[in-house]
Image (cartoon, rainbow, N blue to C red; front, side, top):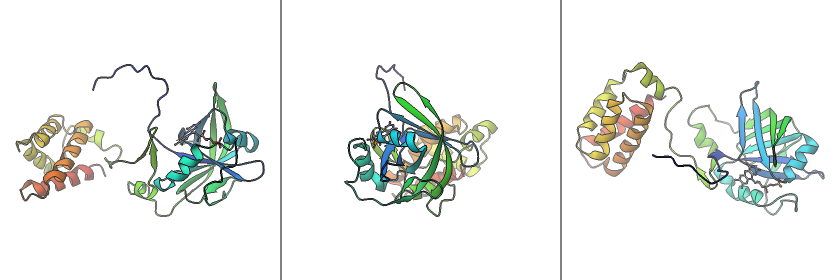
Length: 263
Ligand SMILES: Cc1cc2nc3c(=O)[nH]c(=O)nc-3n(C[C@H](O)[C@H](O)[C@H](O)COP(=O)(O)O)c2cc1C
């Protein structure tokens, strides 16, 4: 794909969203969606880096208290997200929508009961540019729902919302880290069963499958051709994976092996 220069200014990245919780002067909570959140592995609990642009009640509250909660947004929080994001606590308390919250476990911050992962953050530094404050925060405590195992199944449990300027769900699972490049680096295809199946695909005479299969074989299972092949096989399986021909089980087996390679 050819890239062109863009004359447009700011562009939104594809990110999760957190709802930042702070307490107002009178002790009532204020919640504000922020997508400019990232983290760094700095110490046992990590460092959260959070940027906020323009006037905000949240900024005022943080300037006063030095603490905040970051509540990961899951797709069941859409209505609340939309509401908190389109109203500012500078105008009036945001209490048109019912929600439950409780105080943090270690910090005096409001946390949303519905959120499946919550960080309690202490601001340790700030960096100001023209209209934005970036907060560097020590995560003093993290709470999350039970059952998370650090594996791909976690995304099913967390159901994080993805913000692109619009709202999305996460897409398909592609594989584990350090499994795609390893295949390329060793220059060998260890999974002979998979290679045999892909060789069959390469000779099947159906463009949609034989072209990506040939590319995959020629590129020695490189990461980009693997992705292309997975997509083509998924589509083939969807379109005619139960037509009764010899390829029906091979689509499924190939997908299993392509994914298993990355586990
Ligand atoms: C999905 C979503 C993501 C947002 N992300 C950011 C962000 O990353 N940074 C920012 O400055 N404002 C962001 N906003 C805007 C704030 O949420 C909005 O200004 C809010 O009204 C501020 O509330 P407050 O004044 O009560 O703190 C976002 C809004 C939405 C709906």
